[in-house]
Image 1 (tube, rainbow, N blue to C red):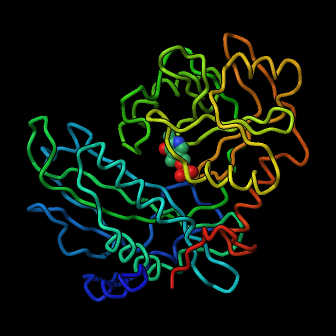
Image 2 (cartoon, helix red, strand yellow):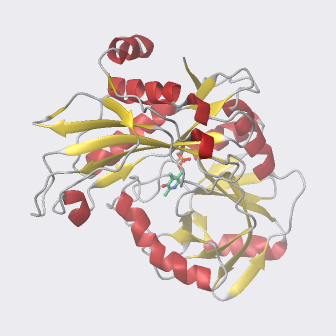
Amino acid sequence: MKLKAMINSLNTNLDIQKSETSKIENVDFENLAFGRTFTDHMFVCDFIDGKWQQPKIMPYQAMTFEPSARVFHYGQAVFEGMKAYKDNAGKIWLFRPEANHKRINISSARLAMPEFPKDYFFAGLETLLKMDKEWIQPGIGNSLYIRPFVIATEPAISASPASTYRFMIICSPAKAYYSGKVRVLFAEKYSRSADGGVGFAKASGNYAAQFYPTSLAQEKGYQQIIWTDAHTHEYLEEAGTMNIFFRIDDRLVTAPTSDRILDGITRKSIIQLAEDNGVTVEIRRVPVTEIKEAARNGSLKEIFGAGTAAVVSPISAFEHGNEVFEIPDLENSYASKFKKQLQDIQHNLSEDKHGWRHEVK
Ligand SMILES: *Cc1c(COP(=O)(O)O)cnc(C)c1O
């Protein structure tokens, strides 16, 4: 069955409980702190007795769980991050959403959690977006951040996979995410992920594990850490929630994905856009020594992070081995060029030759 047909056939089966009032009147869309305001509804589906039960949309609300729910003890939890956009005609768009669905199931499989069916995912997501469409503001930089996630709900504290799970989607309106100048520390001691580990999964515990080393970096005046390989700390891998690109002269260099690195949708879109623009992209290991040398001899033109939340985030300085390197501002940077091209596609302002946009009708 075609995706659209599957969604239509399932829509009738969604159990929908509409909110009686809307919170939208109280929202100041000009001053939104990221991820703190939630729309009127949420999508919920429980996994019980070996199968996903009746999917539901209900008013966004607090939920109760037993203190013994396994997620609280063993961190069996995965999530996704995606965005919906509204164009000037009021149409709603998603960007490569099938990749998010695929990835949450890859993450779930690694955490011994059940995969979530594609028809449920799209029916829940699209119905939710249509119900809360007033929360999506038009204009470049405005979006609705979408957070699908799965948690282990079974009340049992033996260290083994749960038999019950809850899949949910919550949504939060987001304003252009201006991160300011990002200064970063190249990791020399701590690691985000290791061979054979869960670095490629959007597993909740990966983020908790970064908070402490990142807080140490922040005390030294750096907003983020660029993680290096856990073995040698000699190769640059990615940032905490973003993949990372280096521009050396006019070439773009980024690390290959692996079981340590998250396969970012923004990353692969930027690689494609760069190639479309005739820019040479090198997907290979990136030695710290090479980047320091390139910074010294002036061939390092840019470093930027790429991820759904901030889209593209230019980095203005890095520290490694007690040496600080400032990266001068650049006019016509790849960061600003690819960010604009990506946003124009996302907001239905330019041709979508790779078929990345998905209309929610
Ligand atoms: C989510 C995430 C990214 C970016 O992925 P996108 O699909 O581009 O949003 C990169 N690295 C890590 C560790 C992430 O969690």
